Image (cartoon, rainbow, N blue to C red; front, side, top):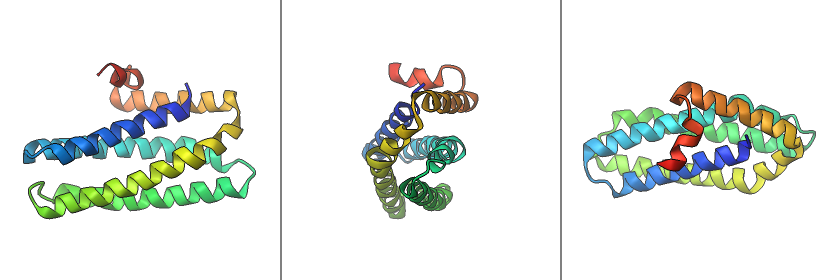
Length: 155
């Protein structure tokens, strides 16, 4: 499986969740969507940090090293915001502010990955990329269940 396509698919799913949260007014639905968003982001960050980034970081370029170190730091900030969200009432004005900050962090991170890191990652070669993608898909399926890497496309 192509890991870049898997990660891009997850990026689109997260973007869609942010839009749903923004449009939803029911506190109960907002909380449920926020929990789904947090779960998706945690899984996404896990497969990047444990599988994808270490492979990219091994490329013999300073740019690969710098990009991955920055990505790890961006994840650390996202985790701080995610840790605060469960304690914020979806009807509280701070909820929207936190969601906006989180959305902007994610948007910046996704932009850098898709426009820089993924191009660099292609230097790993098709065979290694596919092996990474298979490992990442297996991790997603272990967490979300069989067919999870394909199921969303039909939804």
